[in-house]
Image (tube, rainbow, N blue to C red):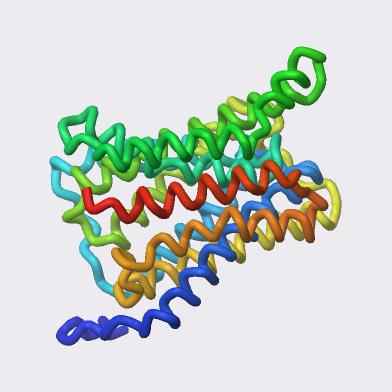
Length: 310
């Protein structure tokens, strides 16, 4: 199969087209997480869901790498960092799905999408530029929005009463852990693996995720982690999450050179909003008006932070 010509890169899409495509990709990822919650509610284990999703993505990436004829050999200095990146994404996937299984999907995605703020702090801690005063102010606004979106006083009252507050606390902790681990993965990608072709880096990352979930499942590290759906809705959720994840992943990966992401990336933050509406339509999950206001505050803060030049 001939390799695609790389002599003349395709021009960027018109901005309305690029924004529409990015929004469609974000909605695909949002639907994937709602489908995951549907699968979890019908008996699917966390490891089984991640194993299926990463396996499908791995097969797709193998086809892309073969088509592009990318070299699979890694420089010696990059091998350890590539393994670390794969393990970080494996942990991030497990934490995010653990959050999705415990709290409303939109809130799990909202909390995990605060990773840009954590990345800015991590970069500063590791010798990078200090966040600007504007960035610090925006991070404070994001934190305030999270307190509203999570309705923290109500959650604390539920915990004191021995109700669902404990499950909410675990879900939020998993979502925050997912955000922190993903920020670490982005730092490794930007500072240690940027020279690798994106398809090769993604292939090895998905391979590490797939192998990690297989080993964890075989060792029984997560009780019930390898359980399969016990009815048709569960199988439907598992199938849809695989389909939507691979479709969104493929569309983003193939189109990203023409999407002008430096300018249009904030559109990806529509994902939690799409999750809110899809979760309501499929799962009957909805948020109180105060929580929706907090969600909008967080998203506005993330968009402003992502547009900070530093």
